[in-house]
Image (tube, helix red, strand yellow):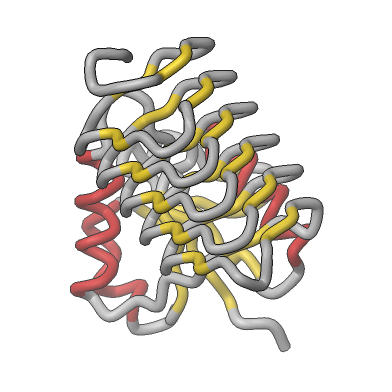
Length: 197
């Protein structure tokens, strides 16, 4: 029997995460925890309650994943991750079977690697990250915790991405640069230094 997992956040990113978790096949989705608690189900999975119900849910479920998206700020995802950790949930990394992740890379707890993403050798990805559909992270790059590397974004070799960074869709980050904490890289842009965004 597969271990059950609960998902934190029932919006659009959750829908994509459900598809990846189903295809990965390691977990059975027990249901969704949604702060708004305004719906009964997401893709057929029941909404189990809101954030206040987590201490009770922890008595039944060991595994959880933050499935709330991240665009303007990483703060809500960070708070949810910390709340789940304090309650003793196990936050596994989830990797789509359609992604390529080098055996020489490291993926942190609670991070999800979406369909067709490519993670090359000697890459380190922190905790609670979203590596979205068709993102490319090249060799020797380091992605801090609580980052979102969006659809089709390219992180070239030797880049350091600090905690809480958002890299927009189809953005390109030049090799060997550093992106400071909580920085926002605009969709479709070329990031080549601290002044870009």
